[in-house]
Image 1 (cartoon, one colour):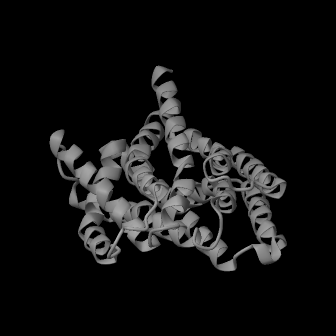
Image 2 (cartoon, one colour; image 1 turned 90 degrees about the vertical axis):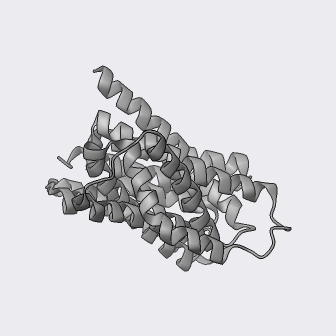
Amino acid sequence: MEKTASGWISGFIGVLIFAGSLPATRAAVIDLDPTFVTCARASIAALLGLALLLALRQRRPEARLIPALALVALGVVVGFPLLTALALRHISSAHSIVFLGLLPLCTAAFGVLRGGERPRPAFWLFALLGSAFVVGYALLSGIQASFQGDLLMLGAIVACGLGYAEGAKLSRKLGGWQVISWALVLALPVMLPLALYTMPASFAGTSISAWLGLAYVSVFSMLIGFMFWYRGLALGGIAAVSQLQLLQPFFGLGLAALLLHETVSWAMLIVTLGAVICVASAKRFAA
């Protein structure tokens, strides 16, 4: 019981940290190139993770685990950060957070593909209904919506779901914080040169808020948040603790309104709530 409770606490802390990712990314890409933000955050987090692995004398993963670590890196180190950074050039962080209501569903779908789970038919009914909420919102938003931004966010959710599912499987073998640290180190030889290549010639016009946003996504979203998240999945159970993701859109909407002074419409709240309810209902039939 104590172990399970510790898992839930760790998972909840991870969700709280992740909730600030999109508002922080939005703040960063206002003044900085999205590709640079993606590569810089991964490089900074990788150097910190490498220092941690060396300090605690962690053994290198077995060769057979490298492909799975590569999928984690592609999903949560490269895919999700890059696609969200590009999307946030076209949409607000409050708008993008609506899509997070689909993240638990996407993670469950990759659980079927990668983990061999077989949900009951009712699961897919609620899954389709939840998707309809999000797609319907994008269509009804009309001119205010961005097809390009919405498409990028959908791609980001798919990439993140894949990274979560693979990371959850690996955390049982390597440990929670070791998974994200090794995935970051694996991506470092690519991300660091790209960060240097895409680095602006001058940072003279970069605001304090952009620097703070980059610092947050580098240290907290890319490293510390995953340490708590994967630990929570390992201790509390992947299926159970993953439901905490359903709280993330609400935390994110609150942060977007509080920190970025963005307007959170009733339509956004209703769609987010509808998607969350559908995903929560689908989870009941996932086993």
